[in-house]
Amino acid sequence: MIQYIQNNLGTIVVSILLAVLVFFLIRKLIRDRKNGCSGCSGCSGCSSSACNISPEEIKKALDETK
Image 1 (spheres, rainbow, N blue to C red):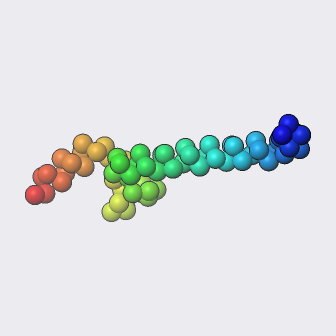
Image 2 (cartoon, rainbow, N blue to C red):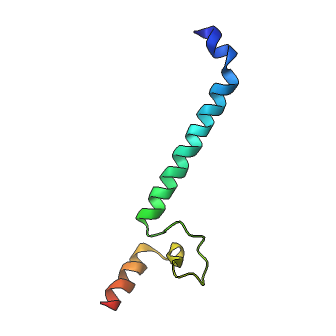
Image 3 (cartoon, rainbow, N blue to C red):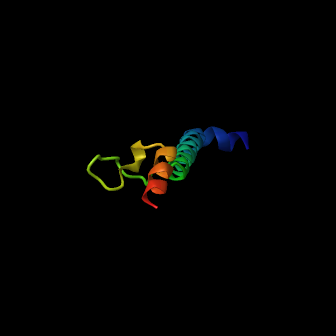
């Protein structure tokens, strides 16, 4: 087992780093989605520019339009 780890240490380290990176990217996407950001770049001219608005402001704006 030790010999296997020594022979593949580079692959193991890179795999762990990639797994951690993917975990944090997915976590950020989930948090952004929960906060009303649709994954856009947040351009001011875009109709989906809610990424720069807090969830409270979005709820307030939606309540005003009803």
